[in-house]
Image (cartoon, rainbow, N blue to C red; front, side, top):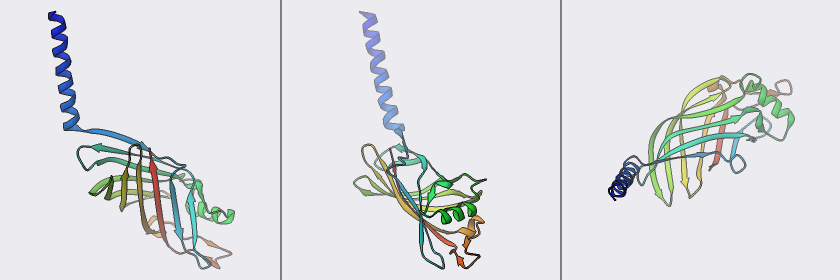
Length: 196
């Protein structure tokens, strides 16, 4: 009888301790990129026409800490396989991969370094202002990245954009037809990323 009472007390203490830890520390949850459901596009200009390339292979993770009404982001990183950028035109793909020096630099990477602010919009939608390291063709720059985070039962969705210049990453804008077609320096990345 004493043994049963002792075991019951120990169980109750463990339950109370577990509940206390969960409410004070919170839960962390890791979501991974669903490549099929996600889309990342790069938009640019040229002396001939505007263009778009789409990333066909991307991966990454976000770790959220649920410490209250507004979650905190403890980790966020993305990776795009550089040679998965697809324009639908083999000549343009070749010029893109040459400009990115994909023989040497296989991926384009983003890693969160700081969350500056998270603002709740209601219904599981949050505006996030962050800073992170973006690495393209071997050059890393610290960039501001603002995006919308939407949380549902099983998904975390990130939606946003970032505009920059190729020359910021020491990339020479590609040319074609012996230099008669030139590419604009400015690019815009749009992302609509689904993590599960």
